[in-house]
Amino acid sequence: MKTLLVLLVTLLLGIGPALAAPATWQIDPNHASVEFKVRHLMVAYVKGVFTKVDGIVDADDADLGQAKVSVSIETASIDTNNAKRDEHLRSPDFFDVGKFPLMTFVSKKIAADGGQLRQVVGDLTIRDVTREVTLEVAELSPPIKDPWGNLRRGATATATINRKDFGLTWNKVLETGGVAVGDEVKIALDVELIRK
Image 1 (tube, one colour):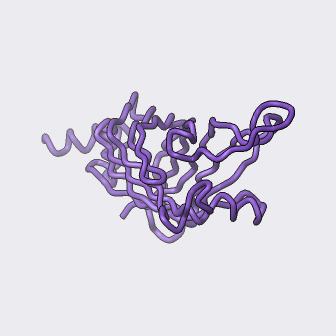
Image 2: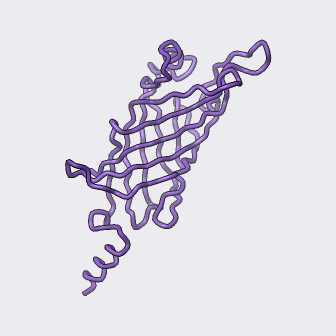
């Protein structure tokens, strides 16, 4: 009787038997995007993306507040649609990809509300400098089954950082005042997760 009651409650809540226990979700690197934008010459934004992203999310839908997130991004995978600028961003002036090939994010605290993730607070490390960053989660979709039988779900989140906090200090002063590159960087993450 108790087992039947648990099953009934689980089905009514829409969790489903596949999600009734903690699960490990792998970021699908073919369907993951870490985009950013930063002010250029004080007048417009330059946008870019890191194309090589890997990571794990351990989550129990019954208690999302206990979820754990771990992500790594290859710094050399930066792409701003301008080869010369990308090479400069890979150089020691910015990411110094030869010395610091990865940037990482590891969660420390999760805020969840009504079965939905709201914030993921964690340590972001760039150029061996670690600072606490808060990801504002816009969505953690319910899982679906893809055509190959895998369980998938999506997540979308945003954050804003100051690049100088991570040792990304290169800049040039403009003759008219201001600087070539803004300090504030807006980040947007869109990832698909596959249940392991």
